[in-house]
Amino acid sequence: MPNKKNSIVILAAHSGNGKIAYFNKLNELIKGDIITLEYKNILYHYKINNIWEEEKNGYIHINKTEQKQLILTTCSPNNKNKQLVINSNLIT
Image 1 (tube, one colour):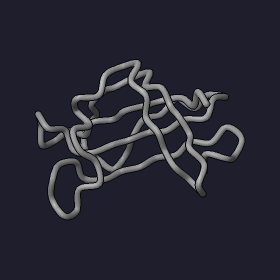
Image 2: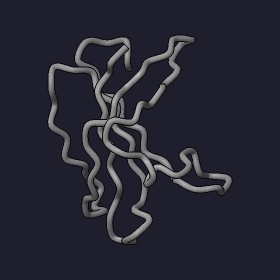
Image 3: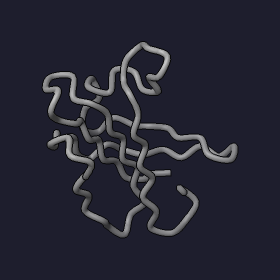
Image 4: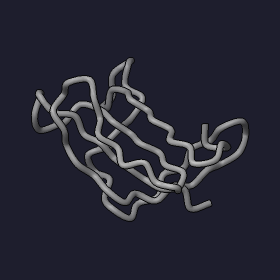
């Protein structure tokens, strides 16, 4: 959870406008954008530092750092065999 030392929060969900979509327009995010996560009534702000696509095989390659991270992932809007991965670091 974001309140733990060196935490990595990973949220995997569908992107779009459907009933099971928890994200919208993740593919429009760019490096440097800010993501806000609310957890236990506290706002955590993360800055995007990397965006990439990986094969959809049940794994995501993450480089663990000493910074708190938030990873968002969903299906790639461009390739049905890939997943979009957005990595961000806590700034406040």
